Image 1: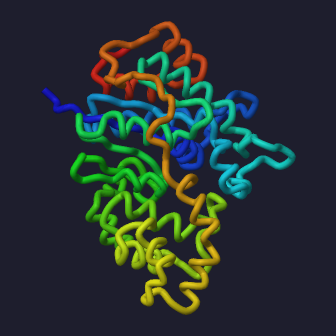
Image 2: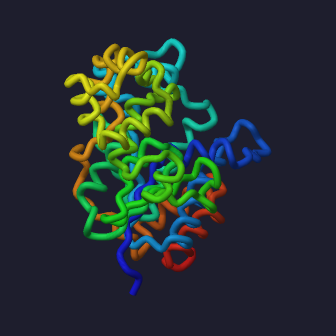
Length: 311
């Protein structure tokens, strides 16, 4: 019997990767594009074959820019807002109609898809991590470094990071990887380092003058962001000059940065365990999707990987 293992998918990260990585080979441009759908399904087939999860959950962005993060740091993801829109994420025109097809395909196959209103997929992942860690190993599949904060060797939680090698050859991010790549010893320290460093891709300013290496050194020296701030407030003489001035000037940012960087562990995600399907959930719906959108091959690859038998 295969030992239990939970796989959590950062779904948007994967379907955006599929969209930009899989050719749009339509003969008729008036038909619905399917490159992201095909790529996403192929990713699932590859991940299931290669890593043998017994539980699989596609985590969803019910809100890609939650109010609580924007209230904390108004610049959060502002560069991703579609021109002329207030809250709508800029999504390529050819990708937008494919997302509902991905949802339908997951439902027809019986693969669990979960999110929580007012929260991002990262928060669904963080909540499911908190809910299941210690009960089975967890693999988080993402192209987003933010989720490195969940790495925990003792709880057998790692990240399959797809940004460089893709789904077929992801970086396996554990605490040794974090130590070698970033100079921090744990997922918790990674999150604290990320707050100090900031992230321009998410509109997070960080502390002026504190780059990644300096941030990592400060966190490893003091153990945590909270301990670093206590040292600053108590006048630790080791923190001096421009570095002290920058850290003191960044105090207001450091008050709210963790609210944005740290993923939620208590989002209202439905209580579903995500066990792999033992049969196709909706054969008629699946057959329609296969014929209507030319998805027979990628759907069959997922069915084969799941061991459901073919149609």
